[in-house]
Amino acid sequence: MDLNRRFWSNDVQSIIRAEGHYGNALLTFSRDNEALPILRSVHEKRVALLGPRDRDSIGAANSVVLALTNLDRFAEARAVSRQNLTFAREDLGRNDDTWLRVAGAFSRAVLKDNECPAAELREMSKIMDDASRAARRILGAAHPLVRGLESDLARVRARLS
Image (cartoon, rainbow, N blue to C red; front, side):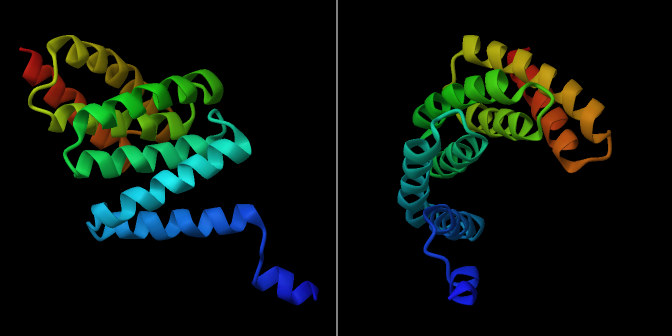
């Protein structure tokens, strides 16, 4: 019986985690139309189970943002990302790698949208400046996340000038 529970769990958290992995795998293979409903479902389940401010809920919302961005649904991606960014910053702190990943997803949503208002670009520039400094301090200059954040910051500054 214990062996069965250990390898073939019916635990709700394990099932949600597996669904999330499946959705993220679809996202990796650019099957965004298929991934989005799965990732939304995972996010809704995580929020219902753990609340919107839990690390796993924030991560699930970030996956939804990435799928929406890939599907060119930028306004929706920015809206979800903005709320997610607030939760991550307030509850996890600016020194948490999840907050840095949420900031990176927000930057991609804004940068891919050519019709993004200048006010939002300025706001994102401040967020990205803060995130890139924190990432450099926490992860080191050679980390790929740091390079991505700094690249996004340079692109935002170029669009603002």
